[in-house]
Length: 151
Image 1 (cartoon, rainbow, N blue to C red):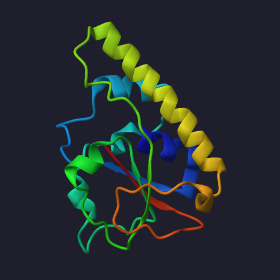
Image 2: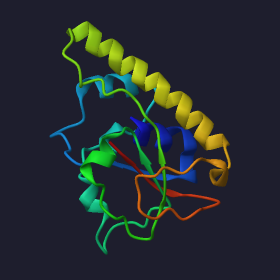
Image 3: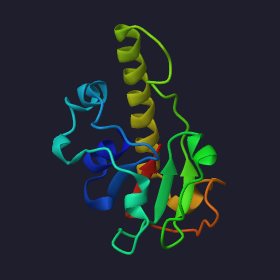
């Protein structure tokens, strides 16, 4: 959801990607349902492994945003170019056993949390953002335009 919202709300300011350690087979239907009313290009969304962003062919990220604490336990790969890293912790709406209505509410709650975080992020100077400790090297950047959201 963060990738789609950054693409939609920030226009050409950011090139955003989303990836994780164990990508799903497809974008969850409840995530699509949250994004559908306001995001124009849902066709570009697809689950990706974060290893797709580690080779010579990968875009060089200025910033990597970890969406939860799982990055620590999974030993995130070293991304080329020593991008700066920050962490945004959100509850995983798939982590708990709940009813369909409860899961839908969980996706909606996380969606609005991400909207708020993305909005603040887009208006904040990047060198004022706190660094995370999940990456081994975090180089400061004053303007990021390539970013990866992991989780």
